[in-house]
Length: 463
Image (cartoon, rainbow, N blue to C red):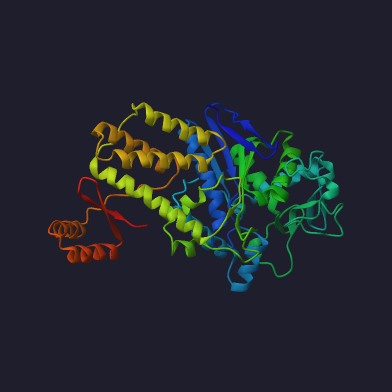
C-alpha cells in the first residue's frame, strides 16, 4: 500500500511520491530558544518523529533537518532583562530542548542549523530577492513585496484583501504595503552588538521567515519533499517561506506540507504567549516520559489534543497494561523471532503498518497494539516458544521501532526477587498477613506483583 499524506497545500490526502525513489528530504521548523520546551513543542516533534520512523521502516533514507532560531526579539528581550548575552540565553534553552526530547526518545535530525551560523548566506539570499525585484530596502530595513508574488496565500488559502499584518510582521508606515514582511531588520537602539551583523543595508539581523528558506535550501536543495510544523506556522511563517523561496528559485519549494494540530487547554491553544503552557520538565516530574509520548500518540496528528491530567492518567494506565503483557511474555521467552510466520500475526502487522501508511494514523495503529496485547495475555501459558517469540518480536517492533516508546525491561534485582519468593511461600502457607506485608513492601519500591494463571508470579515496574 502506498503511503498517503494529507497535504496542507492541496487540502487533500495524496500518494506520497518523493523526488528521489529511496530518499526523503524533510525540514521541520525548530524552536526559538528563549524559554523551556513545553508540551506543544513536544507534540510537533513526536509527530514528526513518527513520520520519520515510519518512512525509515518503509525503506526510505530520511534526510531530516531541524533548525534553531537563535536570534530573535524574544531572545534579545530576555537577554537584556537578565543582563547576559543573547547567545547565552539561546544556548541554555537549546540544551534544555535536547535534554527533554532525549527523554521522549526522539531520533536526532541529521543537522541542526542555527541562524547565527548562516548570516552570510541569508544576506546573499536577500540580495538576490532585491535583484529580482521581489524585495526593497527602506532606511536599513528590507521587505518582501507580497504583491509581486502572484501565488501569495496559496498555502493558507487567504486573499490579500483578507490579510492583516501577522505575528512577527512589523507594521510600518514606510512599507509599500502593510502586508509586506521583513527580510532584514536594522539594528534598534540598545540592542546587543552580538545580535547585529554588517550588510549592504547597514547593521541588522535577519527577519524570521527568511531564515528557514535559506537553511532548508542550503541543506536540502531548492525543492524539498516534506516541510512541517504546527498549524500556527501555516500563516504567516510558511506562507512567507513559500513566497520568498519560489520567488528566488522559480521552483516549487515543498511537495508535501504537513502540520500537526495544537495542544489545547480548555479548547484554547497552549502557548507561551498566553501563559497557559506546561513545560516538559514540569510534566516529567509527575509522569514518565514514555507515558507522555504515548499520550501524544492517542489522537491523529491533525486533530487538536486537549490537555488534561485525566488523559495523561488514562495513557499511563494503558501503557502500564502494555508493559505488563510484554514483561510477562519476556519472562517466559528470551529469544526474539527473526521473522513472522504466523498468519494472524502477519495480518496484525500489516494492519498496523497500513494505519501508519494512511497519513501516519497513530491513533488507529495503537488499537492494533492493544489487540496484540490481548493475544499475548490469552496465550501466555498455552502457546509454544516459537509462537511466543513471534509475539515478542512483533510487540517490540510496534511499540519501540514504530512508536518510539522504549520497551520495558525485566528487573533482576535479587532483593526484590527474594521478597517475591517469600511472598509466594507465605501465600502457599496461607499466611495472608505476611503475603500482604511483602506485597506492600514491593509496591513501595515501585513494583507491582502480577499473579499468573499457572500459579507463578512476576514483578512489573510501575510507571
